[in-house]
Image (cartoon, rainbow, N blue to C red; front, side, top):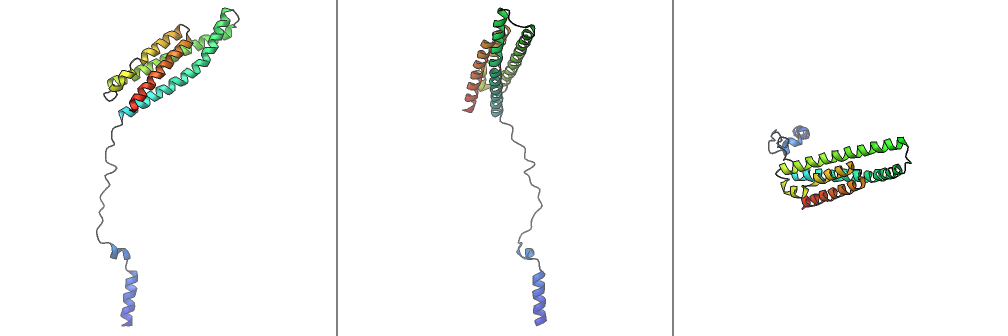
Length: 172
């Protein structure tokens, strides 16, 4: 009897404990999490992000424009008094041309933003507030072409204000 007891104890110790505790069979079904389609992006959120990017770009541009405008104004005043070297005059002309092309690029971006808001059904309710920002950039472009750099910067600040109003409307 001692031999049988020892044999049972030894067999019991080597018996896997998980086999005794498992009461149901596990399946090897693949997870369906990876195959679920992702929801479409929130168009209003994407539109708001684009408006915010335009605001950031425009405020940075207006900030830089303010410093350049002061320099151009001082050179223009010195030119009237015939106190400017040809090198400074040439650099000022290049700066003016750069400003004009930069404002043109800003206008093109605002044109595209207006088109996207007008043609995307989810963004159309906000188009009413957005309409006209590209026209403001056109005005700034014309002012820069007429060497009214400071006025062009002030006009672009008005565009920034209008874009901010659109962004606030989108957050409601």
